[in-house]
Image 1 (tube, rainbow, N blue to C red):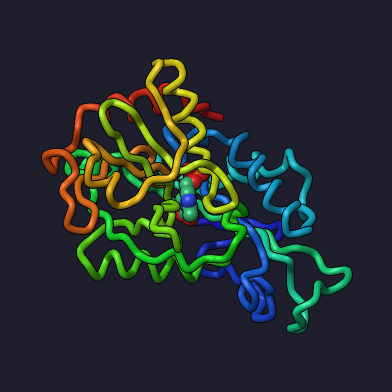
Image 2 (image 1 turned 135 degrees about the vertical axis):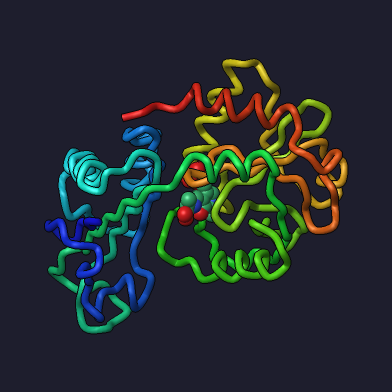
Length: 281
Ligand code: PDD
């Protein structure tokens, strides 16, 4: 297995960054996760554009030219023999003696890893659906930027796992679900799909954008509005979306059974529509 680290392809077990990397000390950096299906990158342009937006929002310059990202991602797919799987790409502000303010004249660190994840594992999870636990949204006010600052979602996900669930749905101070710890959240009520609007309170998922595009084609009604626990009680179906989960049905939220507690018919329609709408590069 190879990883890309600051200009070189290095054996995964030897791949290292410096102890004073600002990603390590301050979570001062941004990242992207791309899915790979059949050796091709899913919605590459959407993810890369979001990466550049994230860089811009934290005043960080890309260490390489824009076109080079695709070259390195494809190289890792080839070198690591990825068929279906994930690419993780991280840029931190770089290495300098610890100091809160931006250091002058340092080069950002770029790390890319790629691994296989079987489609069977996704499909079998899809067929049973997942369980969700609601948790408090403890994050900062700019979660629309995909930064390395992930302690609150890490703690939320662990709370979900400790309660026998697969994902956490984070709840804001007004009782609305913002999103999953690493996914966007959706419910279906009376054939209408509802998802939280893309403000600074959620990450605007690339999977979310592709699903919305797919729904428009199928003329399925989508409402972008906040929803809370009492809406979940009325939901016939529910889902999460992310680069790692695509469209994944939710069958239980806390002690609320969604619909009849089984994967609903729209889950298949949405998954198929999403798979048709994605771009592969
Ligand atoms: N997370 N919301 C949050 C908080 C996320 O971390 C993610 C993705 C999403 C979905 O975004 P997308 O559809 O572009 O993957 C929404 C990635 C997968 C992760 O951190 O592993």
